[in-house]
Image (cartoon, rainbow, N blue to C red; front, side, top):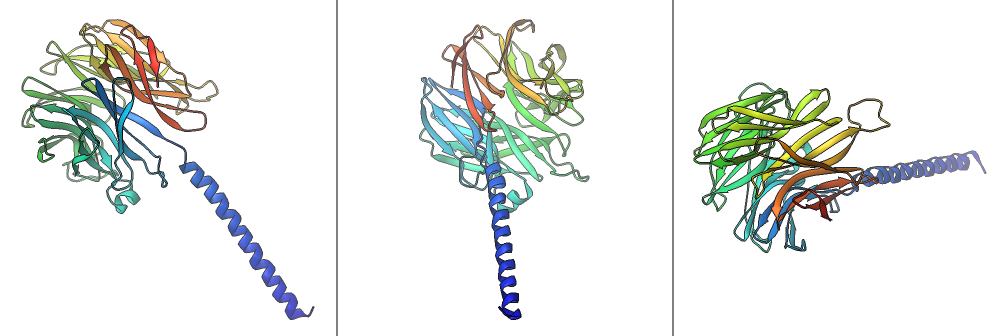
Length: 401
């Protein structure tokens, strides 16, 4: 073999080696990144009754691109699924709240509408109305600043009132048109009015109720300040109260019993721990009383309802520091919480639920003479699955699915 042939052979060997290395790197990339993206997620964020059936909303990533997709599902009284629809418009999306209106359902949440939204990780608020077969009757989006979402929805007369948030994605100074959102839509999805409240960097309304001729919305403003804000039916500000040192979510649930307002959330108890809390206000947003549930880590009450005996039923999550953890930050095992309190905020009962690696309780309804709790659980393989748990009035687990 002459020198020229030897050089050609060395060149071919080098090229082959490069190709092999590239193939190895490509396969490694696919295994790591595609494998990482393929971890399954499915969660339920909200549930609502509809006669003898119920509807729930959330999201999953069960698609080829592993995008998070908003999902709505209807179940009969035997918890058999009658329809399920993914919202396949745009890129990532999720539903956070739902109501039933006769045979129809209206879901609210957020989505990445365009490719630029997806690249920049910003979302628009979203409202979608479905008929009983899962067909879309209307769909509209909303935004004021960079990042927007709707968090809850209720019906009053024939109109829909929604809460949410529209804030800057990054810290900015300037106009203050964003913040917590309160908006009104008619039954055909037309936006009638909207108002904003609080900081354009962090304020959010998580839930609302209507008592008499007034709207009460709860959430957080900034610097860990929970808020309850009162508006008239045209969205004009009437009154408010704040609660210092809540967690970053603030108040997330609200109900009315005998003209008193009860709100749920969490309060700081020492960094990074929190205690779950229920606070009682009068109709003028004046503080009346509170009750705190203190565990051994991060506790919060996410939602609360009123049962047929005028008791408060509250659900949430508690995080306990892992035994192997060397610090108290980000190293928790999470269990679900369900509790019952009377109108004087005296505890009747409270139990925890923790069968998987983590269990999260997001919403609860009265259903079939029992309490139906929804949320999701995480498992050792890293996947997340939605979960239904039926509790008796004595807070005993009757069924899990």
